Length: 100
Image (tube, rainbow, N blue to C red; front, side, top):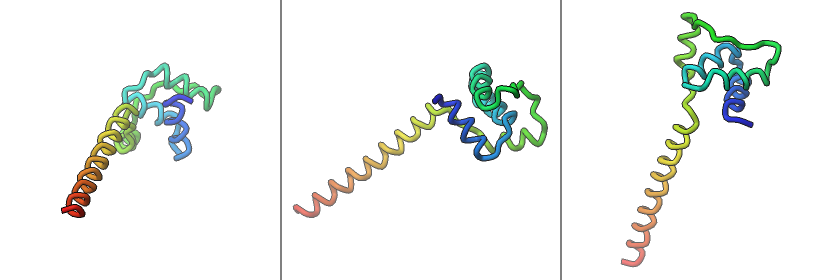
């Protein structure tokens, strides 16, 4: 299962129309051909063509921005690193005060 397949599946489960999912993924920098290929797995009879975003669609897309997974992974690594650093410092302080 590809990353795009997962994003599209999740978006469909949340009630997003295929056209809006397609446009949101385009806006997020994904390759249009790859998006089209993954969307066709969900609805082969309804090939999704690029849309000119309407005013209402543009407003909805601005509230639904999907960051590429690589950015999410980097952010998660920094959060994990920060939490572990705090835990190590706390452990060191506890050990210091116990054996003081």
